[in-house]
Length: 60
Image (tube, rainbow, N blue to C red; front, side):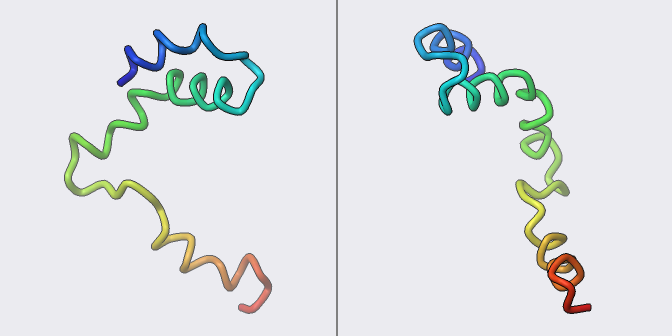
């Protein structure tokens, strides 16, 4: 997938939303894929976000 992103980055404007997304993903490709190699890692942090939401909203 990182090869596809690098091949297509030159086809879009760098400051367009898709250009920004391509650059973000390409620069962080190794970090974004860590969860694939470690079954203990979650793909998202929704559990943590749900736990701290009351604090962020001032309900705690």
